Length: 260
Ligand SMILES: C[S@@+](CC[C@H](N)C(=O)[O-])C[C@H]1O[C@@H](n2cnc3c(N)ncnc32)[C@H](O)[C@@H]1O
Image (tube, protein in one colour):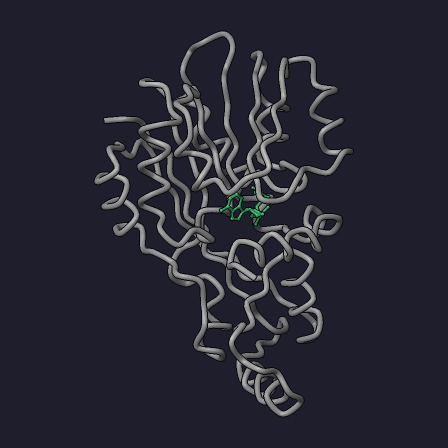
C-alpha cells in the first residue's frame, strides 16, 4: 500500500469522528480564517480552493459562514466529503458552485492552470513529502496573480511526546524553514502565527483513541507491534504524565501569503 493510500485509509476510517475529536484542527481553522480575512482580494465573487479539505470541510464551512460574498468552492482531498457536510455547504446561499475533487493535491495541482483568488489548506501539508513541490504548484498553477494562499500546518514541537517515545514522527519544519521554502516558491509572507496547545487525557487508551479518531496513526508503521512493545510504549509515556493527565502537544503554525 502506498503512503497516500494509507493516509486515505486512516482518514476514511475517521470520517464520522474527525469533526468531533479534531478540536485543535477546528480551532486552527477559525484562527486561519481570522488571519487571512483582512488580506482577501476585493472581487465580488471569490474562487476558492481548499486543499486537504477533509470529510467535513471544516475550514470552508467556517469561511462560508463568515463571508458575505458569493463563492465558488473547489474541495480537494484523498477522501470524499461526507454527504451531510456537502449539503450544509449547499444550503449557504452565497455558495454558487461546489466542485469535489478526490485526488492527491500534489498531483492535481500540476494539472491544468487554474486561477483561484484564495487557496486555503488546514492540517494537510505536513502529510506531503515534498512541500516545496506543492508550494510551487500552488504558486504556478493554482493562484490568480493577486490571489492569497493561506495555510495551517504544524511545527517542530508537534506530538513531541510521541516523537520522544517512539523516535518516529512526520517531518515538521520550523517557521524559518517554511519562510525559506515560501520565498523560494515565489511567495511573500503577509502574516504568520505559531502557538502550542496541549491536550490532556485521563488514560493512554483515550490518548491513542484520540489519534485514531482524528485519522492520525503515529505509531511507527515499520514496527511489528507485540504485547511487550506496546507495554514498553505505555510505560515510557507513563513517565510524561502530568497532574492534569497524559499530555499530547499540538504546535500549530499558520501563514498567509501573496505572490511576489
Ligand atoms: C487532519 S485532516 C484536515 C482536514 C481539514 N482541512 C481540517 O482542517 O479539519 C487532513 C486531510 O488531508 C488529507 N490529505 C492528506 N494528504 C493529502 C494529499 N496528498 N492530497 C489531498 N488530501 C490529502 C487527508 O485525507 C485528510 O482529509
